[in-house]
Length: 391
Ligand SMILES: [Zn+2]
Image (cartoon, rainbow, N blue to C red; front, side):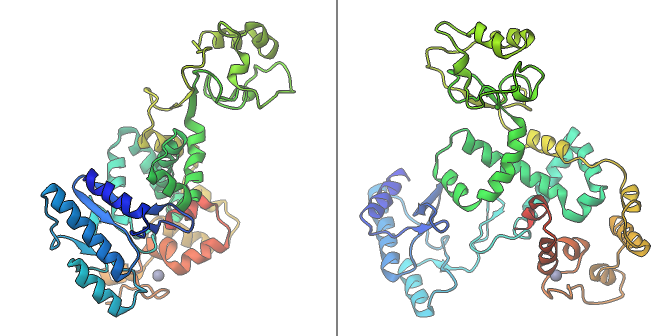
């Protein structure tokens, strides 16, 4: 497969193969490999179809392998003229499809990603979450909470935990294609994921040049600036940890001028690299081994998003008309008669949503995922965390 990758890369370099962009000004993508599977990307033209076909043939000749065109799918973007589509199909010899189906249980999407796209995956992940001993507690609590029922906070927490994984790998220095793509296409989500990352991320000090002495978390669970230790209010926040090194180790005198003795005692017990050979590294505080995991990110996210009190109390204290209170209460108890419920009770035959006429009118749809309702939530300027799951 590596050989095929070289063949394609050479053609891209010679501008024979016109790769596509993942987003406006995003990185160019010509192919993706996973195990024995392969996805090729190129401009929708007869000439490009020929270049692709030739590349595959060249590879088959060199390797003695065969491409199974019957098992291959061809996806052509919807705005392509039909005679061109026919021509490309004929050249490639693969079956054309409007939907690339699932890959390893995850839908391969070529259109706009909505909440519904990954709903199946989310359901599976949530089932897994429920199995976690500690996660279960947070999960049940979350489900019974009004805000979380209304805004799909569970999904949002999980979303944040997953996004923080991507953010983590980017912070940890992954420079691969996927990292470049994520940066371009999902920057907003990454920032959202980074919010939780910020709360759990710590530095393991090496040569001390990357770690900010006062504002990064590298000793204890919070930055030094947030502790009782600083002796002065005038801190130089640009100072790195290495500014507190001497030729042989910590500069104890300088430390004592800046911090209380107890903090200094704690700091000098950390072994540092004054020769500059070992770089500073990010570690994940909530895991015992310092390695990032979605599970610990979820737990951390849940902890920061916890809302206390029962939904009833919360609703009762809202300054809204009594009948709206009652309605909201019934909503949290899932006692609203939606069209899905009506069909179930044989009161109607049509479960569809009267707003979008496209999906079934379930509680989840009516209050969260219906496009018309989403537009309404957005108009309230809700926190991004509430809406991001639906984008
Ligand atoms: Zn709808």
